[in-house]
Length: 171
Image (cartoon, rainbow, N blue to C red; front, side):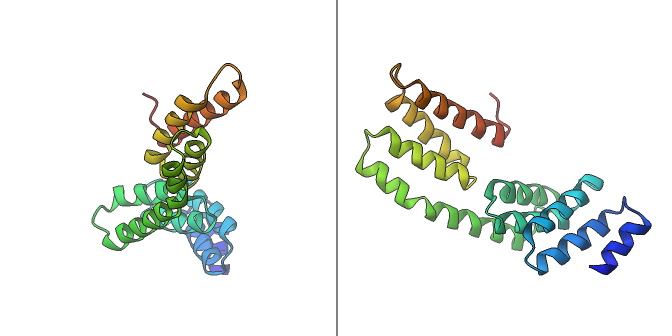
């Protein structure tokens, strides 16, 4: 960590210094500090594969799964043939998908319950599985929005907007 700090003292615009600091924090299990240093590295050098990869690790440890998956997507855009990273991303997605099963089961048991779909949408969005979040939220809206419950509808529509923002899909 000292070496990385010394690099930044000499040249605070060196992405490698921020990356070194972020990597040191990762090794010390200091996830937030690692994330912050890696974000700085990417601000200096937005095509830094190793920083995106490490940011994905730090974000996953912080349970910020959408950021982890986005970071790994950007890393894979830079190195599409990195099989190890592809496997790490697939493993994380499989783990997150498996965590949704109790919510899917609740929907199967109560297919007319808007709250079951809303809970599935919430968990899917938290996990960064936006492709599953949107249909769940839309079904919750179909089943549960009424003039008698305006706050419910507002919350569901807000959640839908957040998912669209996270996926950068504003169509």
